[in-house]
Image 1 (cartoon, protein in one colour):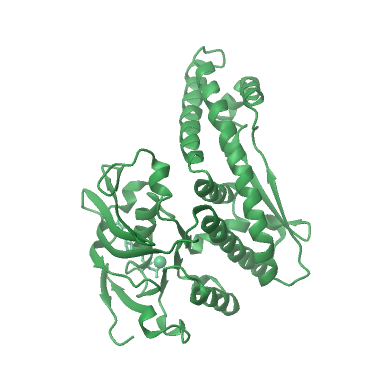
Image 2: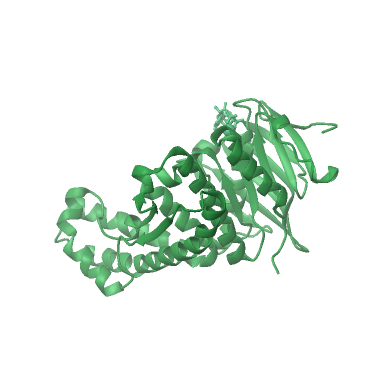
Length: 369
Ligand SMILES: Nc1ncnc2c1ncn2[C@@H]1O[C@H](COP(=O)(O)OP(=O)(O)OP(=O)(O)O)[C@@H](O)[C@H]1O
Ligand SMILES: [Mg+2]
């Protein structure tokens, strides 16, 4: 059975331009309308932060805290089938504080996988055309739900990698402490590598039919995982030892899962270099649908879907496909738009859609919508 997942109530405090929002979304479709710069993306980001402890657009946690305030928080009551839980994510002094039913979770990953969420925002158009790091993050998101421990390995790997780099730059390639950090990197890095590969395989299975449904049927999508490191711990360690001087010069490690790539081709040509605008959009949508499918399968729950301003980035046909999908999806959905009148949902029951308006970070219900 696939669980239903619903945010029953949400309290946002001092998050971006939102001083205070308390609201009770509907279990189906919530349309958040408002002019530019009023806080629509910020509210979606608050939901994403609550669910994952991260942002889909901020580089630093501090950016999320409302200017002039010391801390930000998002709290929600979440219903999964018949189980109700309270989640709270806060940032204070640049640090996160997470609570599940009032208790600090043992691992970051156990918090971040509790309420699965999939977001589609304008930055996602980079998925096909952007740097490899964008697609690696996608692999990380998929891996997180299939094997939450991968996130803990990745954090440990990154920490050890930074330490090794520091030692290399401060003490040179013969420093004795390098051994301990390289051992840690090899131990955790091979797990991260394997998790990336498995995520790529799962994504690929869901991606091919999703792409075919939306694209011209004769276009052939190719998906290939190109590893940046090794899944073999001994081989990983050997490679690190052999690369000390090169990594010192480059000021970053040149071997490991931080170099993994999900290579995408259409009709044998690299998507990054050759795909047309239309093909990139279709591919982005297909990647998102594949991500949703993977998360649903891994977590056995319908993820909460956040759609940020899709119509401004997609052409009308593609926007229509997204909206059709939203109407058919069993998920709780939050959609932002500057043009709510264009987002018609005749096939939803009246109580299934609620319209809200955001203005200067303040949310109000639109009556009679
Ligand atoms: N930490 C912060 N403190 C206060 N205000 C912030 C902070 N971060 C962003 N803002 C402001 O919040 C406002 C709302 O931004 P947001 O991205 O949510 O707008 P939006 O409604 O999604 O607009 P658009 O339709 O243009 O995408 C912006 O004016 C932005 O400058
Ligand atoms: Mg926005």
